[in-house]
Image 1 (cartoon, rainbow, N blue to C red):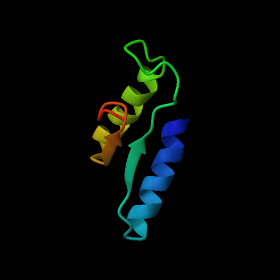
Image 2 (cartoon, rainbow, N blue to C red):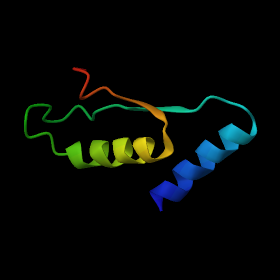
Image 3 (tube, rainbow, N blue to C red):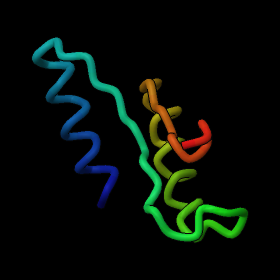
Length: 63
């Protein structure tokens, strides 16, 4: 279901010639090695890669 919502944003932006990019910001909770939301970050990055979207994951970038 989330993919449908993201696709709606993505294709609407393309139709209007708007550059679309995504950033993933970590939830400020257990940011050590056992960060419980890593799966969500991976899922969003996989989506971005499949659509060739620029994506910045602030958790991976040392946020």
